[in-house]
Length: 233
Image 1 (spheres, rainbow, N blue to C red):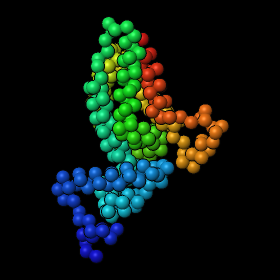
Image 2 (cartoon, rainbow, N blue to C red):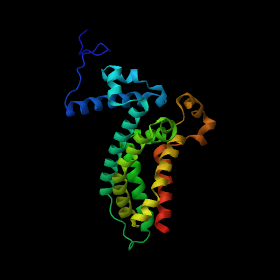
Image 3 (cartoon, one colour):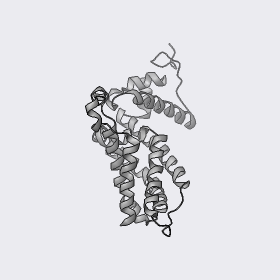
Image 4 (cartoon, rainbow, N blue to C red):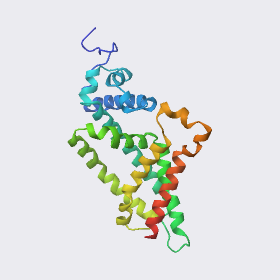
C-alpha cells in the first residue's frame, strides 16, 4: 500500500489546493448526511462509518472536523444555508401584505407559514438537525465553534426577518420577535411527528392515532397561529 492510499484501502490522495480541500470536505459532509438520514440518532453515526462512506481514512475526517460533534455542526451549518436559500426564494415569490384588503392578516399568515413549511420540505434534514443541535450536540460542542456557527447565521436571520416582515405586513422588529417561536415550532413539531424508530410500531397501533402527527400540517398550523397573533398585535 502506498503512502497516498487511504487506510480504507481506497486510493485517496490528500487534497492540496483550497478548492480540492473544500470539495473533499463536501464529500465528507455528503457521507455524514447520507448516513444520518437512515440512522436513528447522531450517536449512531461513527466517524469510521463516515470515513468509509466518503472513501477516506478516519484521520482525514479529523483533519476537517476535530470531533463528531464538530462534523455535525458543519453539516448543520450547510443545511441551514440551504434552508435559508429556499426561504429567500419562497418569500420572494410571495406578495407583500396589503392592509387595505379585508382579512389580509389571515392571508399573510398563511402565505408566510406556507413558505417556511415548503422550505422545510425542500431541505428535510433542517428540522431534525435543529432538534439534534439543541438536544444532544450543544452540550458536547466547543463553545467557540458554536459561537462561530451562530454568528454566521446573523446575516441570514436578518434577511429572513425583513422578508417575513414584508409578507406579514409588520415591522422588522415585530417580525424579529417571532423568530424564537419559529424555531421552537420547528423543533417541537419535529419531536412530536418523529418518534424514535424503535417506537414506530407502537404509534402505528389504531388506538395511538391521537398521538400521530403529520409534520408539515402540524408546523403549518402552529406557524399560522404564531403569525396571525403577530399581525394582530
